[in-house]
Length: 428
Image 1 (cartoon, rainbow, N blue to C red):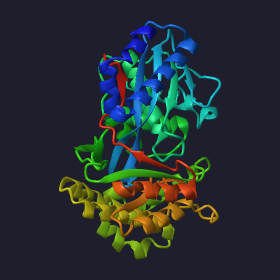
Image 2: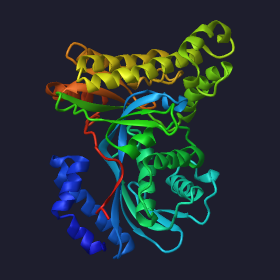
Image 3: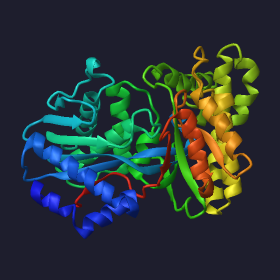
Image 4: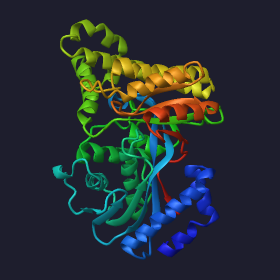
């Protein structure tokens, strides 16, 4: 579809139907305007094109399973309506030119060189090169493209802006050059590879898999490929809103803190003859504590105990959702947050006691919601960023007003579960 035809498509009933699926009916007008502006920017940067489309990938919310995926644990997650979207067209050769919000100059990457470049670590260029390398390693076609990208998945939002960007890049390459739709698990693993190897950030597979699969899902990484089960549960219909609260803090210098969590868990597993904790039965690990106490840190032992508790919690939460037992589900969410706080210890960085935003957000949420039917937990990696609250719909205005007064206007965002993963508009 050329540039002019794509603009006309945005006014069609098919576009309205697609946008309603991704964002909700009430957001169609705002999303139409967002897509129109994106297309205008693409035309301004690259001129009229004979083939242009939109590629979108969602952010994700970690419902439960805090830091379990990197030890082959179980998680409960959801794709959300906040997304990263590109207006994109194919380009001759191997050159990628990508304009992104907040950057005056484009990221320019020659896909003829798909080796790791240390000087690109931590940049969008690294992710572009890494995703293309993941495609190439699997014998999948790659090629150049011109793109303009915008995102409502803010950096540091706890909704995994990096995973949304990576999965969107997979969708672009597959939409422009693929012969058939890329498998959702392979797409997630390519995205994780780009982040781990090229971007230089250690991560499990939860973020990329949740964005790649879409909807509300439970995933078991103890199986290969991961066992994925879609869940049909409507929180709003049950009287609850998912509210993510941006408590603040800077993720920029926390890579070592994140990396320490899987490293310490695997230290415990290694002492017991395994690579990851999922390979070691809980009883065996607990019985070994007297022997391993002085061989690993006490924090490593506590983090291992968190893994076992959190991993075992997921089936109960899934069962509660299937039975529509909100009382049991919310109790499990609170227990998950408490375990992250006391055992995993990822609510603040030791030595930065003046920056305990997540601790404050958790405690204020507890005081507001504990006797009013709500729940609260740390969201994502921790140390800085966000918490997730399940708030009765009637309490959302009060909760948001009180938390925004502490953490800043628009600190609270009500999330909608997006039922699908990455997609291309219009569909081919």
